[in-house]
Image (spheres, rainbow, N blue to C red):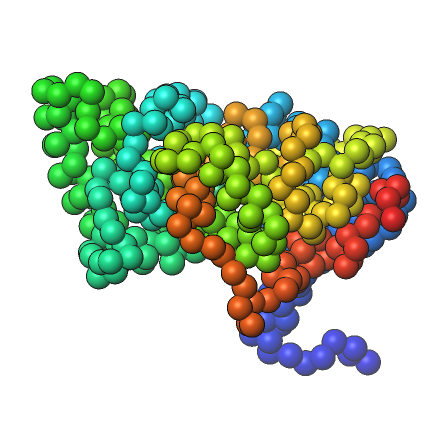
Length: 409
Ligand code: HEM
């Protein structure tokens, strides 16, 4: 008796194709973490945590290892200097995408432009995030609040709508495709070429230049046109959303904590009775909460090219490191372990714009509090954070964020 069904050749081929795809995408990719006994999206055990510390994996075609252990974080961010996921095309030369020697060269050129000394020369008084970041990246002054239809503002918004899909980047690379709208990119290129001419003229005639733009310095140094343009774009991209959301969250916290707001205003009035002064260290945000560091008992081998993620949101709420981690407590000013508090990353590839961002935020808050008060109104939500961490640490991110074996309630 013939046990094989009487399928046509095409049906057999489709069946084989289906089974191969199932193995390739549905079964085989989910072995990476299981093989190493690392807790993954498909497995969870407190013994694994005790064995390796706070790490877990997201299985799939592109396995992603996530970790909260300060030793692991230090190794990745400092010792094994990592690279970000890549992008091709016009952003391929941006500092945040560049790798190895190319990154070193670009970082060396840009870093001096963002030292505290240089930042003092930048006019940031009209600033809020977009205006400041655009003026420092492209040396173009915009007033996005009064002129929302300014071509620079509209193109900026289109540019910022663009989302990054790290896992398809290699495919796009091969196809030489970029996700950024070319019309928007051409707009920025036009502005850049115009500005470059002015910078070159001004560097020959006036010294120092009227605007202390990082890109001005770059023009004077060694980057190619394509590289300078990529940095301008990425500065806007990296600097706008981050500083504006920091300001939004800060104003929310000040509105919901009127006592803290009053204290801050009193300090501002005491230090700056008449005018705004830049660069004062006024806002300390977190403190180390007297935690005992867990040690990784066993070594996990991280295969080459595996994506490693450090979920800062979860790290900054881990009860092992922070007391009352959900509370806005600006008086947390004690020394902080650099690897459990990573608002600007750590190591050689940390945020190059950190000082600049802090300056923008501090000056904005000082000016605002000298003139206004932040208040809640009846629809202001009491909690705005719920729901994020379940995505980042699915199995262990419970309401109390306590980890197996973390030693804290
Ligand atoms: C509150 C505001 C900001 C926050 C929270 C922030 C945060 C960060 C973090 C966490 C990283 C490291 C990312 C990683 O580890 O891969 C980073 C990198 C970077 N940031 Fe910021 N940033 C802010 C503002 C800015 C500003 C204003 C600029 C531009 C002037 C900027 C430019 C960059 C660049 C170019 C990198 C990549 C550096 C490299 O790869 O060498 N950031 N930022």
